[in-house]
Length: 368
Ligand code: IPM
Ligand code: MG
Image (cartoon, rainbow, N blue to C red; front, side, top):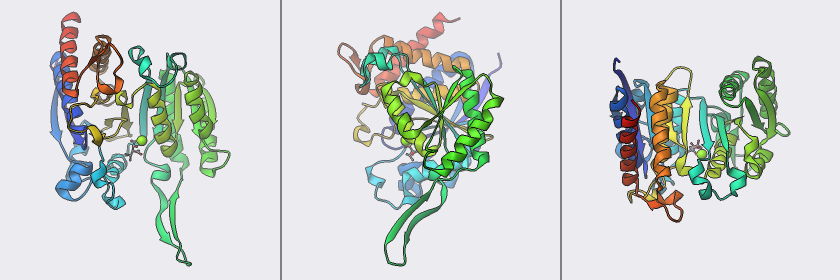
């Protein structure tokens, strides 16, 4: 078997980012050795770490490195320290710039309940058992990027904050297609979420998604208003399979969907475009309150590495191997604090990484 070579840009970012990234890199190295994949890792700055070192949240050098790689693995950005900076200098602006600069219009956020963690959910077992949802969030348009935007002063001296929620047909169609194709590979059910009872941008969204539907006869399409979708996600989440929605609604609903699974610390995501490398990152943030204390749950980062292998590098066997290792450490009863329950073994971030590597080594000897 010839060795596959991949250049991966690592963006550890802020807060717990560096700790969880270390675990993911160790896991990738072990799986790479086992399956004859060679990863060349290069590290770059983003977010608060980049602001401290260079004065800007997304230095040109970082963008260039990302463009020249096969995939980008990002941890998390942000922290109290940078919260009061003007918007163009905030860590979040770096992340949004990276998504826009790489043209990553499709964000896949799976929320799947793992049987081992049902009791970590704040909802009842019968509500969450079997939940398996994929949120397809539009990532480079909508109110996050619409113009005009800003804080303006009116003639009477009153300040007015403005953002614009806008989508073109082209933007709706391309995310719509990703969503239909995603639903095809899953259970064939797609729910498009909008606010078409109030917003023109949502009327257009609903029209276009409806017009795409005949091209995907094997997908059952439904529509839901976003307020109802938020309620239904908590009331009976099993009614959903694939959800497609705009940038802001997707931001909010993906956090809600994440919490069904018990901990946002478990959930990975993939941001994909048409041409450039994808960015793979946990759904959670930088958790500055526990940074540097070896308490973080590295599993969302590790599962993001698995998504990178599956969606970015087309290495499904390696992705399966990592996902299987995560399930097995949970089966052993290993838990970080965020998913801890009575009778389980409480591990720190680093120890959770060691547990994964132990399990991966066992998996390699059992699968010939
Ligand atoms: C997310 C985050 C980001 C977003 C922030 C950090 C800019 O909440 O990835 O969901 O709003 O997209
Ligand atoms: Mg968010």
